[in-house]
Image: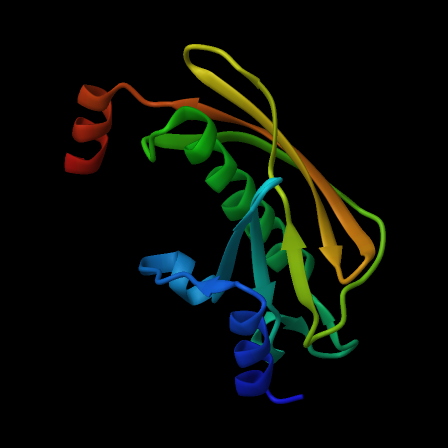
Length: 150
């Protein structure tokens, strides 16, 4: 199936392609879908995401995807985009072939006033390819403004 056909299939299933800027656009494209169980995030893997010599999705791509997907869970849990990743841990358990649609459903573990703990399984179809967990720091709006200003 071509990428255009796969994208049309995803849209028919309720997935919406995320617009992105900067690194997120380069690393994607990412897809999102909301259902009764919450948000799901997806990545339609392409040749540029791969370990060219073996035809699988590069581990760094999967780590970036986990950071994006779990970070979106933080946005949902804390109702703010003002956060940064403190720690991200991955356990790779299988490969995802290029062309796979990789998904993650972020799960909130705990939220404090300053830190959000998340986890999720990275899936290629019905197969688990990795698990991830991490911590995100919620930024004070004034400190966030100074961070952006440099």
